[in-house]
Image 1: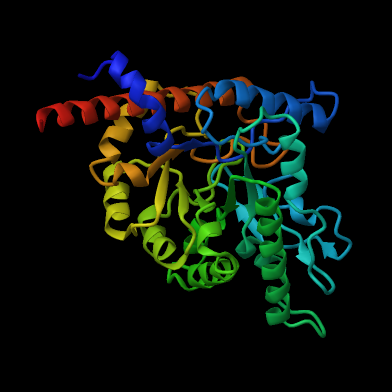
Image 2: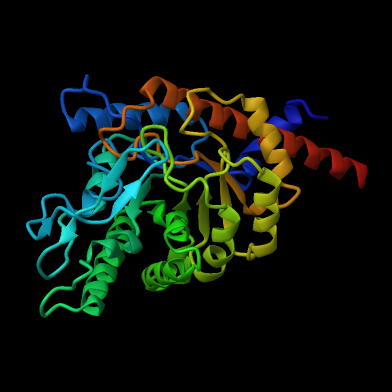
Length: 369
């Protein structure tokens, strides 16, 4: 009953559209061999399109044109200076954000620019995801000493307005999914273990999400992870089980993308999800660890998902990668070859699980006759 019988294959069109959707998180390692960013986008989107044989699977542009997942929106802004928040990683390296030097805060680029470029290279009907940066990340740009004539409240209002516009433009342009990158969520608990900073960040992000209709929120998701830069994390020492309850109870979007393959105590994570999951929410579990070179075994991914359905209803489960493979353009810790091999493993492992669950469905249907 666990094989791929003709009957199971005939059922797959139904199962694939309802069972275990799979999505990339974002970035694919850049390569200097491309003549231009446009060539990189074309090659990456074409490759991903070909790899995803299930036409309902959502793909992305690999963030080939972005300087990073966080700074694309403010690249080239004249009112930013050095000396912003520092993000330390476990291996000792750091990333530093800029700081706002003059009012007002405004985006210089919107994610719809990248979406439209990707749309030119996909086969007709292929759904595309677009990642956007969270308002909470942009909130870190306001200087601690303040700015004359521009209060923090005014600044946050401008941040929310830009973040809403960023998502709105992508949805209006035809994005099947918009993913809000919220990697600072887990990091906030390292900076403030009381959870006060996290609560502020979640409230700010919910101001953005709540600006959309219920139907639109079905297309919006949030990605959280312990960081991934040069194969190192910034907050893996913070239990994700401390983040999940407020995350799932505060945000009104429908999709949640969680780094899971990297977690040591997977059943503890699943138990926490089960205790806090609401009926309208779907959990995309990361099944590939982007900070390791080893390519996952599809059978092992299938087994991960078999364990997951003991805790998460199948209709509320999906798969993804733990994070982008190269969130910053200069991150060359993972090769493109390895990234595509890991994506292939995710696709194959997800497909094996679909077939396993379809076979079980048929088995129990026969049993109950």
